[in-house]
Amino acid sequence: MSYLSGAITSGVFAWLCLGLSKRAVTYFSIHQPSYTSAIAQSIASAIKTLVIGMSFLATFTFAFIGLGLTLVFLRELIPGKEADSS
Image 1: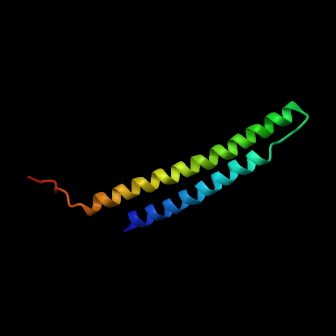
Image 2: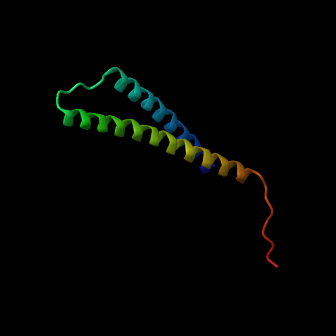
Image 3: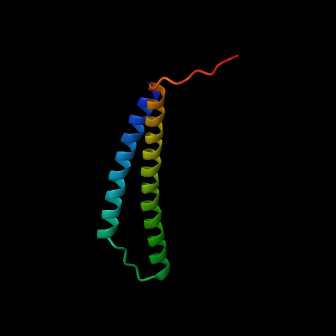
């Protein structure tokens, strides 16, 4: 049962992170930074890239963990062969 609850929790976190990722992409698409300094423009672009990348990385990580826990839960439901101790 712990595999199932972990899979559901991870799936919910993945769904929330996906929503956050979509909002971050939308926000940064609408609000383009416009600085006169090339260094400030470069730093703003780097921070934007890091925020969007980390949000999608969190989405992928939680989704992958949820999928793995779901597969382990299904594997536990199917009765398998017991190891013979001869």
